[in-house]
Image (cartoon, rainbow, N blue to C red; front, side, top):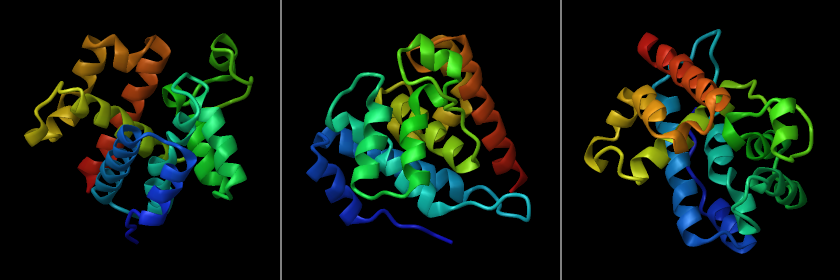
Amino acid sequence: MSYKIQNTDIEILRNAGVLEDDIKHCIKVAEKALEIASRIEVSAQVKLDMELIGRGALFHDLGKAKTHEIEHGKIGAEIGKKIGLPEEITAVMEKHIRGGLTEEEAKELGLPVKDYTLKKLEEKIVIYADRLVDIITDGIVELKDESEAEERFEEILKTYPKYGKNEKTLQRYLGYHREIQRLIKKA
């Protein structure tokens, strides 16, 4: 099943007050997430909800309409619920901070204490795409060769602390990278 980013969803971001630069980022993350998902072979064990990937990626930073601080995930999920977005999409929005926090990490960061860890492959693809888009947009790799961001992902995250954040977050991102690359390589 394919999924195409909807202009009506982009308008929801605009109407919520998300800045154009953040909307461009969200669109790039959605495009990258869908592109990655398209390279994963769907099987009896691996089924992907392309709409969840596309819309989860597009709306992941909805909370940036109100703040660019760490609680933008929680705030975005609250806004998403108010405007009627499906729960699985608001879950992506809430859990995308640092790739899915544990209860302990949430407490340390002053977020509501709960388990934000990612369970679905679709969620992991969105978070992976978000990290890749940051690396590409920041010019760590050349725009003409976006695949370099995937090829050098581990090295880049270990070299630039802003992408890995801390050891727990770094290990989470590296785990998603390895899991997704294994699924792509099988295809």
